[in-house]
Amino acid sequence: MSQAEMALLKKGLIPYFQPIVEVSTGCITAFEALARYEDDEANVSSAAYLFGDTSISLKDRREIDQYVRAQAITKASLLPDGTRLTLNISPELIEYDQDRPIIHTIEMIERSSLKPNQVVIELLETKGQVSDLKKLVSVYRDAGMRIAVDDFGSGFSHFDRAIALEPDVIKLDMKLLKLASVGGLLAGSAVKSIVDFCTKSGAVIVVEGVETEDEFFFGLSCGAHYMQGFLFSPAQKEFLSKDTFQTQISALRKRFFKHMQEESIRSSERYNALITILDEVTLLDLETMAGQQTMEAKLSSIEGVLRYFIADSEGYQECPNYVLNNEGRFVDEQTQWKAVNWSWRPYFCQASCSQRAIVSDEYLDIHSGKHCKTAAVRLKNGSVLLVDINVAV
Image (cartoon, rainbow, N blue to C red; front, side):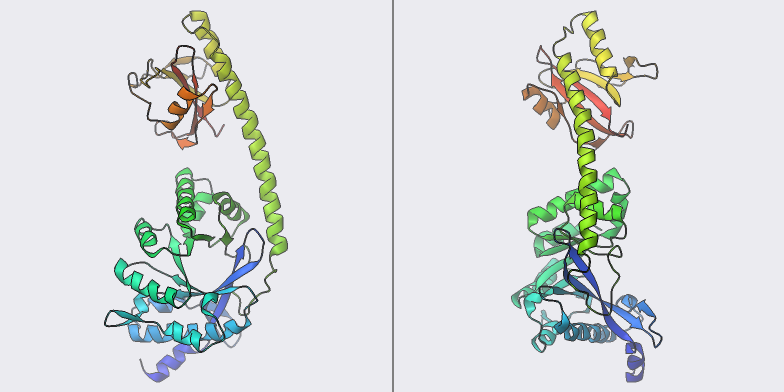
């Protein structure tokens, strides 16, 4: 590309800064630098496409990348106290000299008023050899910068990358978050598992792409420390004050807390009633027809009950599954579960050792497709009664 063409490509190319907020304080803690085009009429558009445009040579993409980053680092002298600058780095654009990465960002920071510990390097992709990525990360870390992995959870390979790179910050993939926030049990479980993985690894969790209150609430329910997205602000030309969103986030936290309290009370009332019924069943003589009929009458009164079955003390199912039909009676489900062993299920072991009924975590029942929990209680003879319940009712 000629110098004139490069100058034209750079015209109006500047960094904008999107705030990252801490949910516990409501304060802005960091700003992510993002490439934008601003025309003479102050119209702004994303310039992110430049860095993946293979019609532009790798050398020219590196020059464009460094041009935007140099501006962001220079402007970072205006960062509010106690905040950091997040810089996006694509490993593909890094130059190497005899297997040693050449890091122009470090040179830029050394020439600026910015301190290395004010900078977070966000890896935009984690393709390529882990050994090369570790070398790259090592150079940034040795210079005093923190490391973030972007779009974590968008592919299983990210787990081995995270284990190898040990990032300080993990940003959750917004596509997965959006699926989970609208009630997808599998996506929700995946996000919560990823958050659990991040927490145990010692990484700080940032949820990006937060656009609605529901997405913010889901992020809170997953235990996210920080959030970023249009719910608060798009990328801005200037740095915002640290306390810009404190009032908004405080109000959101209060609404979330109130909602969780109400849900907790409803859930507690429902499952306390369930446990009371199951505890009453343990007092019945199930060897008699009258005892069995009384048990089924009590079970049919449970909100959302789907079926019940009984396993012996070692976990082997003793009877068929009895499903509640439309007439309110339990009938043989005609499934081949008798003699199957359930001792490996966590709730079976808990119930076999407990004096009271227990309730499992929520799961997706593969046969009915319903969101379920299983309640279990040990009976007089040592067998365990198991009751599947539709939690969505």
